[in-house]
Image 1 (cartoon, one colour):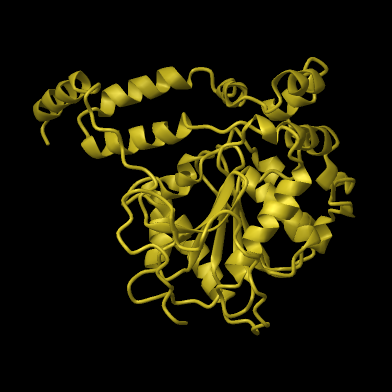
Image 2: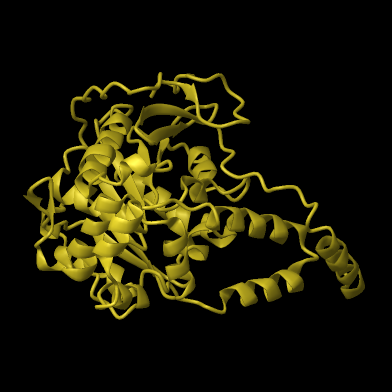
Length: 380
């Protein structure tokens, strides 16, 4: 395209920005297979020829972000790509906590909710286990769970997951400062408002809004870029508040006490010792991650007891390095190959899934799904 044509399209797109259709997000067909309180477990519908592996995959996003960052838009969806590669893919949708969830504990989420998601997903495979992938805070939850209750975890993969919280990043310094009155905030708000957390992330890069605006103007001629940009902005502004008591424990036990490194943290009364993680483990860190610095995520591999472990360090930021088209062509095939290499271990008896509460298996998860709700997976 010539510069003149780009200029004409740029102005057309900028002038028509207000009327631009909203981006389609989270469109890969999926069904709710378990639900309780506000959270649900989704199972993406397998490809027509069925799944290729006996061990399902469970994606665990951050507790404070919507799950569809991993299913951003058609052609730019991690879930879509993994399904196409033959994986049986599940994902946790944490939902939206209400005022009544202010007393929801960290243990209830990490032991109870995540534990049930793992067991329900695992019963769909031939080994009674599941490959668990946690992203950001979802990775921290997965690490804590795996250190105490590893029975149904075939392998652990974490992306930009903090485990060492006494780093020199701004979030760590802020939450450990004397001016951060944790008790007063939770007592006043119940659940920690998403606006507060979003503001904390924005302070890491205060010039980011201006940078985004300049980038949009420069690339406004590119419709594909604009579609991706607005899909990501939709996700970035669709945030979730943090249950108050869970947040209190998160800040006090991890950020302030550095409980995973100092072995003082517990899950349901049991010590969380990273050396007890012996399953195959893959950790991915990013060089330009200003939310979870490398020094916060890297110690996991050094501390765990597994002999089958690997760290991959890549360029890029906290979000872009995970959901970009380059990541779909490089990072995710690498993770898929890791799971494939750890798929053929001895099978164990399949443990029956816990009955779903408030939701019948196969209920429709989102508008736009094509297949009939409740369709069974192809036989393995």
